[in-house]
Image (tube, rainbow, N blue to C red; front, top):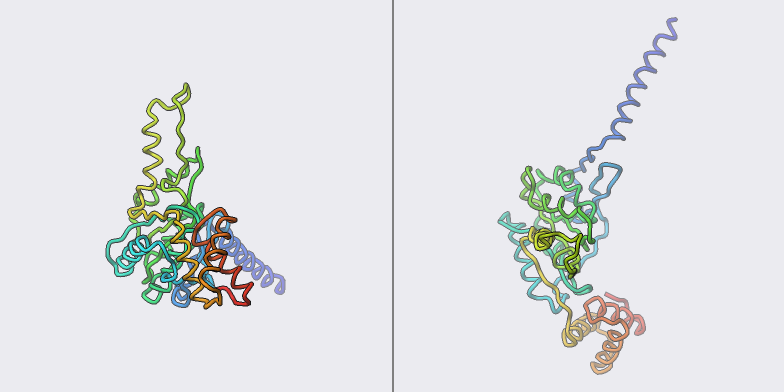
Length: 292
């Protein structure tokens, strides 16, 4: 009996410890990150896990030089101005970068880290669905001495999806005040984030279709700063190609560079910054050079 009693007590204590561990593993609240990671890293990703999630660092973020983005000077200046105000603790807005694919929307946001990272800016990458974890995310960021951009690339909604209504509340802050050190920057190919169709009024259509349209447009209105990225003309496309070629010091004469760049754009069916970069990558490889 003297041997069994201590053993039973130890087993009960072990069972209690295991029960607490199970509750921790099954908890629905996200585990807060170690604040030290925000001093050693500047780019992060929100990873969902069950009903919760966590902020994890990105060891090798994509570094973009904003000075190398050609043809979008107006949008860059406005984005830099808004971010400067944000990092300086002044008033700033959520930002929607919308427009043609491949024109540098995502690159503009990524390029903010080299410019503002040393001053405390941090970027947390989210998927579209992760935006609905906004209250859980900001709970972990609210009291930290950094400025956080929650970056959602390619934000849009399909016809019939009701989730955009919830996102409107999140952008406005709802009952809980949005922390002053967090903003949302999103990119989209659509200015109004949802498809717009012309449909004749039928028996099952809304009596007041203008109200349904207004509700859809009100989502993009939550982004105080909306920056348009438009299709490049031929001169702008060629200027981007020439900029990349100069940076790599490619040994090719201007006439040949122009002709091959136009042929590449014709085959791709697009004149964009992405198309220019893909052309230069291919040309650099053919000339025995590394791409930028």
